[in-house]
Length: 473
Image: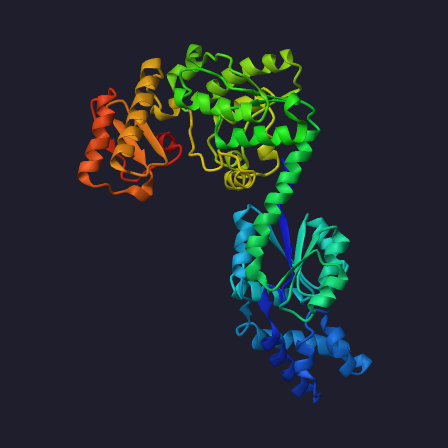
């Protein structure tokens, strides 16, 4: 798996606008010391340590005590009026949404930095204060930060010292020219531009990781269902290795909808790879037929027990599945355990690629599968505890085909569909955005399900939910 994602952020003038509070505190200090600090000039240069900012205006032996007194005055004058800068909350949310850690690395006195974060309810994983310039590099390196976001040329210096990507915003005291001259990698007007940049950065870096991983594999068999994930993996493998060193293998059985087979083959052949379609016999495995919570374990075990020797027979070094990063944290995935026990590799998950990123990359590569609806195997439609049989699988397949045909006739723009076999009835899940349907439309769709072999059928008012039968476990 890829290393945990950690992003570092400077605090003053990157995440928060400390100018007014800093200025108020400096005025209070000046009153006490009877020193006329040039408040506007100093606050325009926030970033360096406090002694650097006020030192030129004091005797050398007065600097240390003045710094201590400033820190004492600061909470009363600066915490409440200080606000997040535009886009800061969204920038942090973007890191969180990607499963990343937020590390705040600042030159500010640590207790006062902590007060700001607490007052503004800024969720963070680590705070390191009182570090400056290249000294920030030690913290960033220790925390594994691959990106550091700041507003000052010395923030660029810290990122460079850590070997991290330097992202600079123009909300602080350093100009565009100064930041570029310092060698920043990315320059943004402010943090409102960060989420868009970050999404592109993550996708590009994860695609690069995927390519590097695939290139070192030398040859590969892709366990290929024709869905968005395995299709993307197949295309990525061809890009990295060339079509002569990649094979697509699709296990044919009663659980694979026949409507999926020809489109999957055509896509693989369009990439120039050989396509193998061995029969799999999961129905002969008692655990699969019993359809307890671990049914997917037996299905994946059967598939890989067929593909692994087939890969060796064709001189291929690895068998890869289309498991993505979301799958690895989804909680209930017994099929992943079966694949892991059989040494199948998971390049998409290892690169950290999520389902959304796979779809976006597929769109950029003009793959026809980029917006293909999820299409789990037919056995996933049968409620746990009901025996999986060829009859049940065929009935579900007929029912879904019938609903799609009827929806097309009625002008219902159906994308996601599941007909769930719940034993005493069929439960029909449609795109939630389509609900509620007009009574006559709903009845027409349900009639097509009954005509396919179900005595009773009903629409699920919650709409389509991937893996909804897992709720019963």
